[in-house]
Image 1 (cartoon, helix red, strand yellow):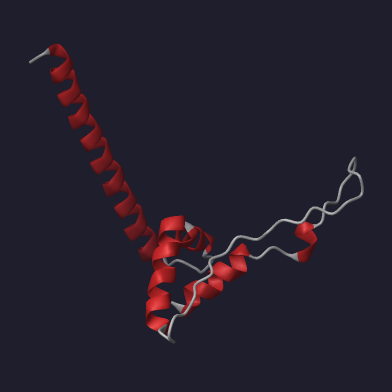
Image 2 (cartoon, one colour):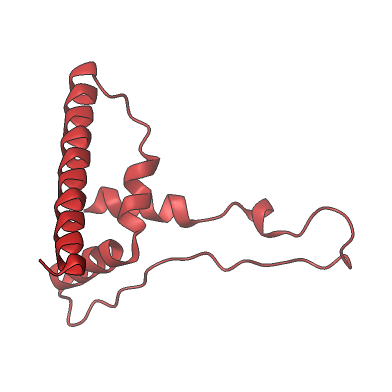
Length: 112
């Protein structure tokens, strides 16, 4: 969990030069962007509860997906094959479900 929190903070923090409004045409003022983040209060020293709340909040806000997408570690070929097979199975299941729903809707429209 600590690893996820570190990755989230490093992804969500902007470098100092990114918040300055460079480029032409402006009035010479600085644009400050507020970096996104999650703040969790630790009540009564209950760190486990705060970590659980933070994890649920990260999942619901999509930050966890951003972190996983940003991972740059090396994947072995066997891992790539497993991921490709899972992706293909998920795609086939989705297509089968879409086909079944289409058939049901067609029957319903035709009044059968």
